Length: 302
Image 1 (spheres, rainbow, N blue to C red):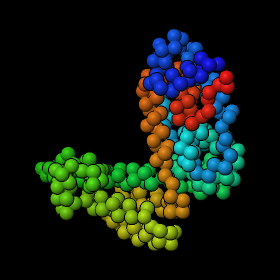
Image 2: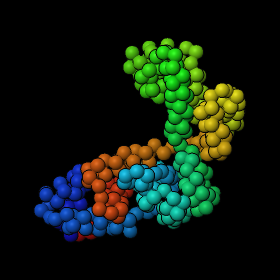
Image 3: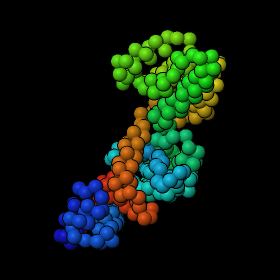
Image 4: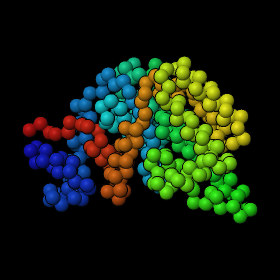
């Protein structure tokens, strides 16, 4: 038992099972078994009572469109569990691990229907909060679509104004280099559809700073009316989508949560995946994630 406790500490500090195996003088299966037992012990001991704020997100697992669902406790900054695929059934299985669903006040997520339906089914009293970083991604995509369309039109007449400007439009001005900032200011003041699309995106950032639901509702109504009457179809498409999901946007004003914690875990999960150079099966992947991101009490009692 003392050796297993030591082995767990080695595993926690090693980038891969192979590194830990070499230090411990064990084979791969033995080290994997130690990690599995540690995770199972930690899951039995952990307390999931009175969880109030959670986030659910997806993460690429294999090649192509192979995903897993990740459920995180936003206050404790820990992963509760992961499940294969991003279907409603997967999300529901994750949510059912919460012993007192009535304690959950809000859940951050993107606008993926499977996540929304699972939350509505199992957490009817919890407020869905659409993550503002996913909203920004939709608006960025709309701006880039306008840029592509306008670039194609300008290129036909030999105008190179929008050449190599993709990342200028997608980068916040405060994060730009001096050279790109100078170029951006010139482009923004030009009579470009892309510049107009960017202004709609930039204007929407003000929504997240509104103090209450009344202010937020008025802000969104004004932004929506302006954008929907523009000639920019990609912006109009996003505006229509946001209006449809406005309750989730308002949820942010009420609870001020994002999936930044879950997104941060996604980066850690990617590191785990890259270090392992793939996993033999999903359960090995799950054990690795919970071992490093579950904040579990995994030490054996000696």
